[in-house]
Image: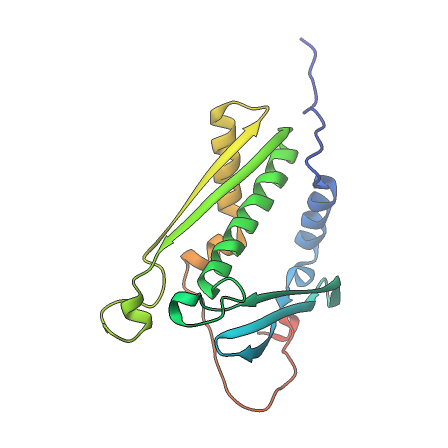
Length: 199
């Protein structure tokens, strides 16, 4: 029997580069220390704009090819202007984007040709907590459900396996499902402490 290599597929992911980065960062762990920063500016009412432009990684300051911005607001139901998605919806968008990027990457690495990928992400929330009407109700999501529809050149078991691997490696899935220390302060702006300086 002749051994065959994993078929080359093009899902738009440079897997060779990703694997090379993993190898390089494993050899030099300091390079894997990243810090992502977002700048938020209030517009009016409950409307604000958040922009990302640069980040720290691979031992130095890095820049996106261009600044990226997203508007958040509350819907008209709450007497707001609905000038953007709500902040909780932005969290769901981040989760969907993280998982889907993982699916494309894992599929490419495993030789699975993707024809289409779509997801519905839904979260339950009791607003009595956020509105301060019930101290026993948490402010955030009580649960999140993600459902994927994937058309690919693979068996159902292989598709489930690549989704599971994406979930295992998703940064946003980890952020949502594990406690994260968040420090909020008020005062004069100070330089952002880069990841390499955090002990």
